[in-house]
Length: 186
Image 1 (tube, rainbow, N blue to C red):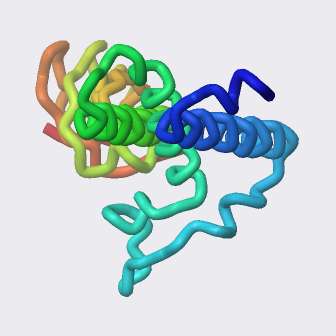
Image 2 (cartoon, rainbow, N blue to C red):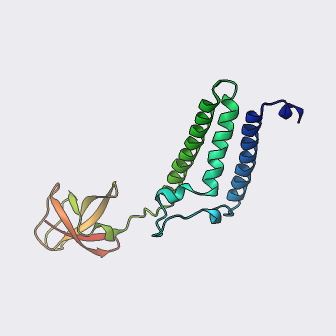
């Protein structure tokens, strides 16, 4: 502990912030790995309309810890390199903001993994598609269409009540016939 007492008061503050923030961060991480959400309940919701995005998402215990983690360690790392202590404070605050931004980016990526992107045939109704394999006339047989849904191209069995539809023809999906076939029209 003697090494800590030999530091200047400002460096002691940076070290204290860095070590305490690191300890809280590690505790948060361990609790999160075991499925706990102790820090999620302490988020401050400043929005009046129930919106979960925007500025109100910035004010949370998690983000405060991330900011202090970046600012504390930034101050410790650059303390001897930067002579002007006002500039050092600015650099430490900037690093803290960068830590919060990195955390937001990682959370955004993880939240995208939670989305249910399961393709449902009902999503094709009303959409335009291209005939991939000729579709026989008057529901006498099946052909295939290619359709893009949410950036993915799907091949689907198709029938038509009208005339024969050749390869490459643009068609509109009218309804779902069964779990794997749609009816289209030109």
